[in-house]
Structures are given as structure tokens and as C-alpha cells.
Length: 590
Image (cartoon, rainbow, N blue to C red; front, side):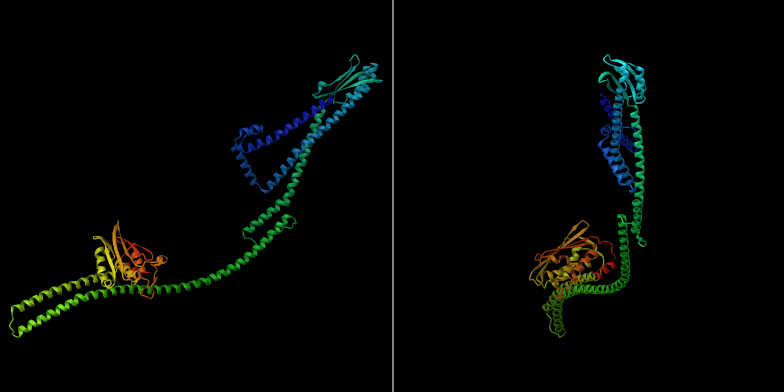
């Protein structure tokens, strides 16, 4: 029974201590919530908090804590690690030590209780046998003087009468433990003694020992923390700070001061590595400076060379431009020359006919004059014959001269248009018919046929000369390249209105243009018949006239042996460009 009471008291002390330990993390958690969410500091059951907090809120607190831990300085992290390391060890060691102290005190209390009750059983034997309560009381004072004793009661047997009773139980709080021992005299049980002991002093001693242990542990903890922090500050934090400052100097390019740290541990090795890095960077920067100076010198030399080469290239470009202008002029004059030859050929027939008629008329007139002067008899039939000859000759002369005049007029208009970029309003059909009438003498000597499909009343405000040059070049290109001495060939020029523009399509059924060179046909001096009558400027001039002078666009479509199609789209009213600019553009076609 006494052992059970002692164990109950021991468990009571442990339960109070473990209750404090259970409340400790709750208070810490409540303190953390107070700092972050302004919740009052109070003890809260963790199970209730977990039930009340939403998952999102807990996750947000976790993120905030992780962010705070990542942003801590090295010193703060070390202090926190030391603090929580010691706290963690204390959480496990303090309960063990307190339990050891508690067990030791209770074991001593039980042993003292056993010893004192046995003493009472011995010293009460004689007074109880002699029935002398005064002696029993006096002899019991030795044990009763122990302030842990709550009461002493002695009973006689077999009547079980109370022989002695001493008690101070009303002055104590307990808990109490009681041991009963028989009183013997000559091996005969003559009574019983009950010794009740209070645990007040034991609890007070345990509390004092706990306070003393806590103070000792706290003092040791403070000394340990201070010493650890001091050592870490001197051996780790300050050297690392110095290395960080040196690293910042390196990042700023300050490589003149050496990194010196006379230590043989890992931080010393890190300092040696940083010093080697500084030296390597200094060497690299020195080499880079030398290379940079060399590059600067070379750049200056290169700039001089570039200027010289640029001047040479500009001179060469001017020469090429001059040659190109000359070739363009020659190309245009050659086109006019071919027109002149054709017109001359066409004029030869009507003028020759007129000469023949005029000579015939002259012979008839001379014959009539001789007959009239010689006194030969003139008949009416002779006069009628002369009048008939004169009438027919006049008709033939007028017809031939009108044909010649028409050819000369067309040639004059086309020659003026092509020799000078004069802007004017003109009818597209009329202009193209004038152009083809001048080209027909040359085409009539070939087996090739040119067809016009241009509706009337398409009026343009543009440059007829450059436009005629475009189709002259296309026709010559078909004759020279597209048909290439073939014994047949057809060319067609059609036009139609598309809003504010006119779309003109030139096509032939010649050999076509290979796909691999189609993208190069507008390049100056590009030709597949170089040295065989091709200058490589025809389509280049055509492209530049259409795009730069007429303000339109040209597209080419062709496949081998499928002929070629050129689609030219120009506005009905050419965008504002003065005649001098058009003339200059035509002269500088490139």
C-alpha cells in the first residue's frame, strides 16, 4: 500500500512536468501567430488550431516561414541553429534528469520511511509491554522530530486499543503515505505502530532541485551560446564577411590589393583560392588591355584602309554608273536607230512609187509639149490622154505622199516620246498602234506575228515615251531570246482597266525563261546571249522604267518551252514626278 502511494505521488509530479512540456510548443506557436497575425498571446490547443485553420492559410504561413529562413543572414542562421540545437537537446535531457531526481528523492523517502517505522517498532516494544505511555511518548520524540512525520499511532493487541497518538497532519498538505509494523516482545506481537509521512518537504525539495537544475541549465546554455557565437563570430562570420568584401572588390574590378588570410582551415583555403582567382583575373585583364590596344591600333589602320577602299569603290561605282548610262543611251539610240531603218524601208516604197509616177507624168508632159511646140497637129484624144495621165498620177502621188507623211508623223511622235520623257495625256490604244506601226517594218521581215488587244478610250496621264520603250524592249527580247531564229512565233499585248490602274499583259509562245534564272532577269548586264547581240540591259531598263518612272509594278511568269508572260500594272495617273526627274531616272536606269 505504501509503495502504491509513493508511485502515485511520483506519477503526479511527472504529469505536472509533462503538462508543462505539452503546453510549451503551444505557447511558442501562439507567439509566432501573435507576431505575424496580431493574435493575442494565449495557450491554444494545437488540434483546435489545425482544425480551424484552412489549408491555404497554413500553406501561406509555410511559404512566409521558408521565405524568412532563406533571407536570414549567416550570423542569424548560426545563432538560430545553436539555440534550437541546445533547446532540442534540453527538451529531451531535462525530462530525463528531472525524472532521475524525482525517482532518487522518492526512493530516499521510502527508505527513510521504512527505517523510521522499524525504529518505532523497536523502541515502543518495552513501553508498550510495561504500559508506560509517558516513556513511549518520550522515546517517540526522536522520530517525531523529523518534520516529514505526519502522525505516529501505537495500538495494543489483542484489544487494539490506542496506546499512543502523535499528529501534526492538520499542518501539512500531503500527499501522505502510511506504513504499519508489528511491535514484538520476546517474539510475541503485542501491538501495532502506524507511521504516516507527508510528501510536502519532498515536493518542496523537488521543486527547489528543479529550479536549481533549470537555472544551472539556463546558465550553462547562456555560456554555451555566448562561447559558440563568439567562436563562430571570430572564426567564421568575420572571415566570411571579409571574403565577401574582397569578392565585391573583385566584381568591381579592383584587383590591385591581395587577399591575405593567414589560416590553414577551409576558410583559409577559400581565401587562397580567391587570391589565385584575383591573380588570374589581373593577368587576364592585363592581356585584354594589351589586346585592346592592339585592336585599337589595328582599328585605326583598318579605318584608313576602309576609307581608301571606299574611295576606290566610289570611283569604280562612278565609272560603272557612267558606263551604264552610256550603255542605256546606246540601247535607246539603237532602238531609235532600228526604228529609223524600218521607217526608211517603209518610206522607200511610197516615195519610189511617187518618183515613178512623177517621171511618167513628166514624160507625158514633155511629149505633149514637144508636139505642141513643133506645130504638130494636136488632137482632142492627145489632150484627153494627158489629162487622164495627170489625174491618175496626181491620185497616186497623193496616196504615196500621204502614206509617207503618216509614217513620218508617227515616227516623229514616237521619236520625240522616246528621246525625251514628256508627260502628257494620251489614249493607250492610239499610242500602242503608233508604236507597232513603227515596229512592223522590222517585224515584217520575220515570221513572227504581233497582236494588239487593247480597248479604246483608256486614257492615261503618264509618260508615253518610257512606256513605249518598255514594250519595245519586251518585243525585241522575244525576237532575240524568246524565238531565237525560230520560224514561227506569236506575241500578244492586251490591256484592261482595274479600278484606278490599267493592267497590261505581254505574252509570247517562245522558248521561255528557265526557272533557275527567272529571279535574275532584271539584274543589269545579266543575259544568256552575251556576245551574241544581248547587252543584259533590256529587262533591267524595263523594270526601272515601270517602277521608278511610271509608278507601277511588273511581274514575270515563265517556264521552259512554255513561253513568257509579263504583267505590267501602272496607274492611270502617274504619281507626281516632274519631267526632269523622269528624264534623269531614265538616263540613270540601273
